[in-house]
Amino acid sequence: MSAIDGVGTGVFATGSAVFFTAYAGLSPAQVGAGLTVAGLLGLAASTPAGMLGDRVGYRRVLLWLNVVRALGFAAFVTVDSFVAFLVVVSTIAFAECAEPPNRRAYLSLVSTKQERVKANAYNRTVWNIGFALGSCCAGLILAIDTRQAYAALAIGNALSYAVAAVLLTRLPAGGAGDGGAAAPRTGGAAAPAREPGRRPRALRDLPFMAVAFSASGLYLHIQLLNIGLPLWLVTRTSAPSWSLAVLMLLNTAMVVALQVLASRGTETAAGSARLSRRAGWVLLGGCVLWGCSGGLPPALTVALLLAGMALVTLGEIFCSAAGWGLSYALAPERAQGEYLGAWSFAVQLLQALGPALFAALLLGGGLAGWVAIGLLFAIVGWTTAPLTRWAEGRVGRTSRPLSGLAAPAAEGG
Image (tube, rainbow, N blue to C red):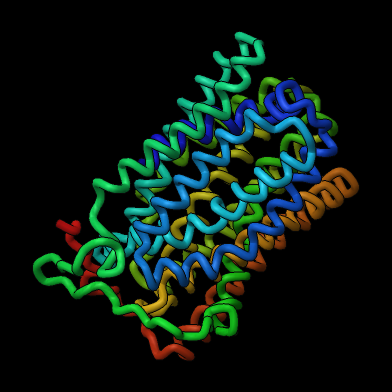
């Protein structure tokens, strides 16, 4: 399911700029404004969606979110005005923001506690493989250069979500509220009971949210890759523009090869916090190398950019594994959806601030701006460990290896 999702996302993401401008007739300013508004509105979905999953079952929520996304991307082919675009993209943004906590809670439910971080790592790996394949397909579609071909970008992504919804019906149910009674594996614990009527508390859990925002600061590397590096490469270096594709290929290849290996040591909150600190230092090194690439001959520039990408990607891999481990270890078993939703809220909020921050620091500060961003990563990674100890103390948890099973439920019927 993750692989098919990745293919569809790769198809649309690669050609989305062309689709919105050439097919829908929107201006770049309208596209940017619509995506920003939709992203901010989507922030409100994470925690409530996680709470809904806690009550009715994560698989059931995921199924309907895939249906909504399938209908939303199919509706893109009817968009012919900014208002219509804003309505459709906001609907999709709600579904996109609601999906991560339910997907991660579902993975926790159908995995052993010792294996749930690795389960996320495997899913991210196959998603990246699918995304790379989808990007290649998008290149072929864009080469056709017709209106019908552009429509295929959105329809292809819609079909991927429809297929994902069908596949979800073949997977184990996510608890008693999800179409089946809880049926633990041998030696496992039953799925956590729901707490209907309980007031939301994750966003008011100060130690947990402190760790969430600290760890989420490292996720700003995503905006560094999507916004900061392309702007820097094009405006401040002598590297050819095609080298950006080579850098992204290196990033994808490293994630596919190393993400599962990087999940080792995240069985405890303390181990995850150490990995988060390591991610901060590695990201600092990558930022310094990229900052040194300005004003140099093309060959040396490309070499520094490649070395920096290797370090930044390693930091990305460490950051992802650490975030999965910390959020699972510190989230109460009876409210995983809600707490993982609150964690996603922290990540998404900081992501919204990243583009403006990086554009100002990098284009205005040069090497000093890169060093400042790198130091931010290092400081954030370092603070995660003491904040994690505070959160563990407040919830009465320890850093012993996790044990037991978060059991899958049997399919209804």
